[in-house]
Length: 421
Ligand code: CTP
Image (cartoon, rainbow, N blue to C red; front, side):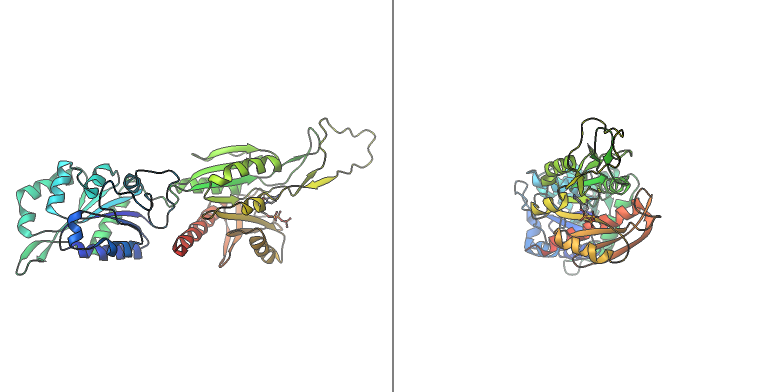
């Protein structure tokens, strides 16, 4: 899925840009449209707004109601100069149809409307689909503009030869077929060294990983066997997909993935404190940590001596269910994923019960009765449960399981956006 910014300029072929948007959205791309004032004579904003499901911008000073977000993505949490934010987020900028006037302005570096301003500000590949009268196309002025733009690295698709819009005219000037323009945009994305679309750009993801340790005395603790591998794999994958990731790591001795903010904690109480501080600013919570459900009621400050003790009974008290507590203060738009370590048969039923009881969007279930997967292993095999789906991910390296979990998060968030009025 790519984020395609489409500039529509004035010309009869503007109506074919509607078909281009339709094909692009059908292929799974997110599209936002800028129009020049002249193009409004040919196709109204409402048509493009209908097919993209997002506002169309015409004037440079016009604020974007979507604050620079593509359909299906979250707007940024600051108040950006919205058209520039949109330009920054695009993976490819297609101008179709590109009129002779716009080509000349682009070649000259003019920025007098949203379409030309965006072209100057955009660092994504530029794809131009010219359409005009054949004499305008073959005019040396237009040809010089096109040569300049090609030299600067733009892709130019078409125009095709054939019957032109004005009656009886024939020649080169027809807009390339929408499918061919889309293919040109997709291959501009594939070009080596080009910026690749990143599906979680702009999203803030909070991950917890590892296992908490609850002190019995100054040297001993009640802990668990979680290594943190699953949580670290999730953090790495979310960061690779463009998210801003914070990882709360409970006793994890693995290397931090690149670009991930890492917060070390030891006990359930420390994890709770860090999670409560970070959660309000997160869009997604992936609660992979194995949090102790109980802790010694009184941890001694020294070391308990064995001398004089036949059997040692440790009184425990319950810890806070961090995930349950966060779920209670969740705001709309947050996605919460819990993990359930279940033993053998009935796991699915218990995991589904957790999904409902803790008010989660998804639960990742793994069967801890198996020695070859899960705790401290490089592989995992899970079932991802949501309110409407149940997907089993067969035994795979944890990095691939992480990718499957994040695919589900993306699907859940896309569904939520579609459900919004
Ligand atoms: N969790 C939590 N705080 C706790 C305990 C668990 O946030 N004190 C989170 C875990 O990070 C995990 C999910 O809750 O995402 C697991 O749910 P839980 O009900 O604790 O299940 P288990 O501990 O796996 O199993 P059980 O309750 O059956 O012992």
